[in-house]
Length: 157
Ligand SMILES: Cc1cc2nc3c(=O)[nH]c(=O)nc-3n(C[C@H](O)[C@H](O)[C@H](O)COP(=O)(O)O)c2cc1C
Image 1 (cartoon, rainbow, N blue to C red):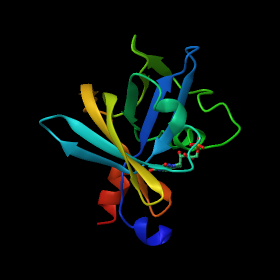
Image 2: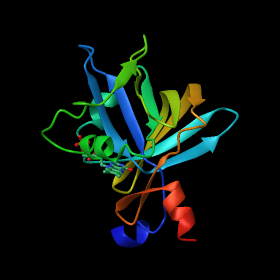
Image 3: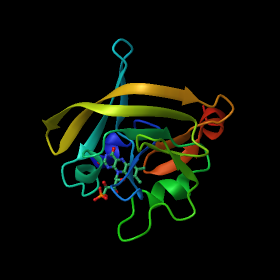
Image 4: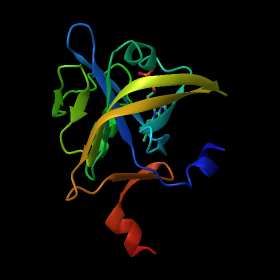
């Protein structure tokens, strides 16, 4: 079923915040959905087994960065275990502790609205407090278990 799910192309979001000490914590998430314009809401689905989500959900704000084309190494690193997920990753944090990656194609500064158990994932509804995008920066595309760029997808159509 994982392979069938993978036939639906998506972007990848870096879900990141600073911890109590000011160090960045985060994870890569492709299960993201734009939910509502008014009120402004987005959602992500997080594995119930995630060890990072329980830490992120304690933070007052969470930064969502839509990874840009070429950021596949950062994406893999943000999903890897037993590594410094932010080594060689260029990022900045806000006063509220949201962490944003440089080179992303869009950003959402969010707080948690609600969390619902949905099968083996949590559906996390996030209220958007700030947002921005970089029109010149294409997003990274995740499809069939590998990374693509928009231009290569268009060429094959
Ligand atoms: C391309 C990609 C997409 C991913 N999408 C999700 C996702 O939608 N939801 C999720 O919980 N984990 C997703 N992951 C896995 C997490 O990034 C992470 O590996 C997992 O949560 C285990 O780490 P943790 O225990 O630190 O949370 C994805 C990983 C990659 C590489």
